[in-house]
Length: 325
Ligand code: SAM
Ligand code: SF4
Image 1 (cartoon, rainbow, N blue to C red):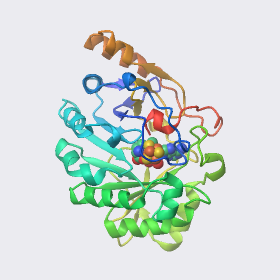
Image 2 (cartoon, rainbow, N blue to C red; image 1 turned 30 degrees about the vertical axis):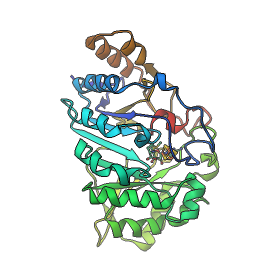
Image 3 (cartoon, helix red, strand yellow; image 1 turned 90 degrees about the horizontal axis):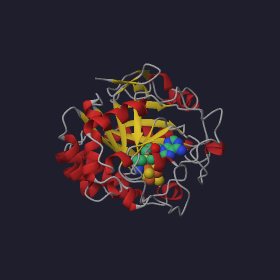
């Protein structure tokens, strides 16, 4: 009973935003001082989330990633993780986090059934890190080490590479990931609303970064399990794998296998389009499981063929933190 969209793509992956709030303000994700968050009464509660995820599980979605906003600012996230990990059909439960609260929660999350962790890290220089995120680098590094000590492996570091902001640090990030045995992914910045670090000013095509790295490191073809959009290389003589995520220069829409559920129960079909379907009214109006599954099947028919970040960069009015990155 696999969900398949109108372009024949099987949908087997859901990114679940458990909050649109965050304790950082990365300049490409949210405007500085932004506070216009979703009303708590609109947040799906844990019972509602469990019900929706169970329905997706029955429809063949096997992989769930908890994201946000910052998922660890949602109270009792490890409890939710434990409930979702126990659902039949859900084979892979992972987490995207900024790691500020990971030192406290890493062991509990591992015990709850989170299998893999991705951490955002855009700079290894404390002052620059503060400029980009308004937060403290030390907290993030402590969180990362706690995740490693808790036994998470592999841990993927996500770095949004921005011209004139942090593009001079890519080699340092490679050295850091070799030293700590992390996987590294570089991401192209996408236009996601009027934020401080605008994609139009700071976008850089990752092919330039790859060429630069190839001058210092021998890059071999590589793969990583997971089925995501990154194209990987391996650094010769090390265990390091580097992924390049290029939504702008080389989009990967033809293999898109995912949808996104926001904290208020809106199912977004594409990060770069406005097609959506509201599940919260069904959940709160007593819909049966069969009705919920029908609604999800219908929602998937709305999935567009591709994003248009390049042709219509002004189109998206949602910040990444709202959709769930
Ligand atoms: N707070 C968590 C974190 O930072 O990992 C999870 C949510 S965050 C929205 C998910 C990912 O989206 C992060 O890796 C972040 O760097 C990325 N992201 C946010 N805004 C972006 C943008 N405009 N372009 C590219 N990536 C973006
Ligand atoms: Fe928060 Fe993640 Fe957005 Fe940064 S990228 S502001 S950590 S949600």
